[in-house]
Image 1 (cartoon, rainbow, N blue to C red):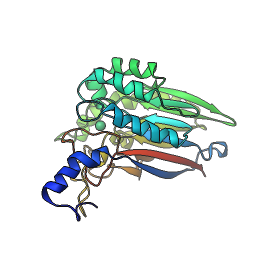
Image 2 (cartoon, protein in one colour):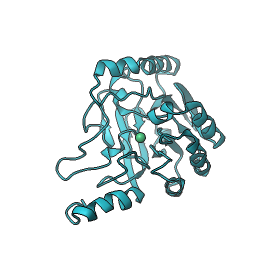
Image 3 (cartoon, rainbow, N blue to C red):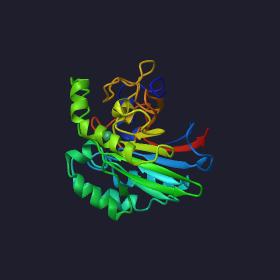
Image 4 (spheres, protein in one colour):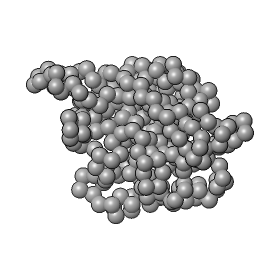
Length: 283
Ligand SMILES: [Fe+2]
């Protein structure tokens, strides 16, 4: 915690100018009971919430890409919010993301900031960068001895955390739930599935057994974490529960990364930007 060492203006300066430019690599081991032995050890670099724009440069994202490449992941998963306000900034981000070098694939879903701006432009730019964007779609990946399904649900642009209700949230996200039900029907029950969706809240309302693990972003870890109190502001219906890390949800384990970028107020404190690296284990 830096708050014990810094006070007043120094603390504000650190939160404004220093910590947003840091990048932490978080390595997490995830045990999945249904994962076939042949996929034991599969690695995923999980990046999210780049928010390229007024507050986050493409150079910062390029450093995250470098770190991800150094980890030599099998997959790179990007869970949305590529831009902030200006969708044209995706072109800078896409140039950088084209440098990702996973062994198998780079797969993405769109976040609320993407669907609020120009989702088709962002999808197209990502496609040209070699990123497969799943828009309520699934992608089978064939490995020696096993197939892994990536199921990507698009954000519905509604978080509901500012005075909204669970009923409103479910109304706005009903299409995503129906898409998940369809994907569940159309993929073999015995094969492993990873769910990619920007907002972790919706994982609580997914059909039972839809995925072995969900990969999410959106909450940014709260951006500011206070000693003892944790993050006072988390854009979630569930308070601090889905702020960051590996969380056991009611339907599936959920991995939430703190993200690479940020949104206003453009500060981070005790919550540095993150390149998450997951090692999946069977059994
Ligand atoms: Fe975000």
